[in-house]
Length: 400
Image (cartoon, rainbow, N blue to C red):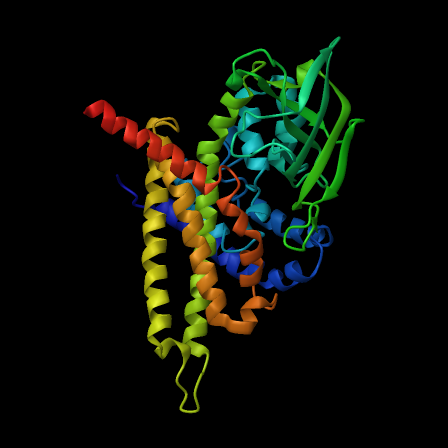
């Protein structure tokens, strides 16, 4: 395992970190106090700057207009961009578009690529992904109520989805729906492209997340499909292969998430250390940093971040070398390890900031609100732990 960063990659990271510090962090007070949709003009200006720097879409292939970086390399960039909640968006590698681009690139027809993939990579449109359902457990993804029934040359889709992130303002959704109900569980569902202006695609609301419903890209929608009719040519890949495609997307996607979370860890750790050094707590000028409990939190956080980072880099390296299937244990490990590390670091940083940490005068409260879901989406922590432990115990039985 060699995680040495090439000279070229180090230059790229330095450029990105400088851009985040100078161009994006100053925008955060506005980001925290206004609707995302109202920030689109200034964010587009920053996106144009990124394009001119030739840093646009780092994780996408060069033939699509991206930088063509490996998963490990993009992980390092994702860590740098994760320091700001608008970093990935400004650099054109934000979820769920990043995952949808991968799906379209691997499984889209030439017509689908021309109509949806090309403008999506260019940042001219946005997309969303509709899988999670209101009445079905996300911990068991084969349990879907949304159906897509054939009628002539069309699919007619009916169902109720929510947490379709960034649906507000999206051009299309990739919808997971049951097309083959008689097939084995993992071969029942398909992925289908549904333009959001299709009759029957009803965006019910942006769901308030801990009191904040958001707008445009920074939102999570509830969607009701009512006799929503799209051509059968809108299917992605083979019919019934929706879960197969989803598994291809999840491995790299979790690396993206984990490295972004590590960026959040880095940012909140920096804020915690600065606060500890600067916050005076006694007339003689002693600061929070003189207290043993604060020093313990800082030491624990530094060690936990380092451990989580090395685990994530190893998982990315392994996917690059042998593929996502062979790295599935490693990916499950980092999903719950990094999410929980991030939660602890954010919580400690907030505690060190006291009352200030509860406000939107600094970014910590935003991270506290919006990143709690990290332990739920893309597989709840408990599901990953149960699955990994089951396989580990089985291997011991087989060896015996």
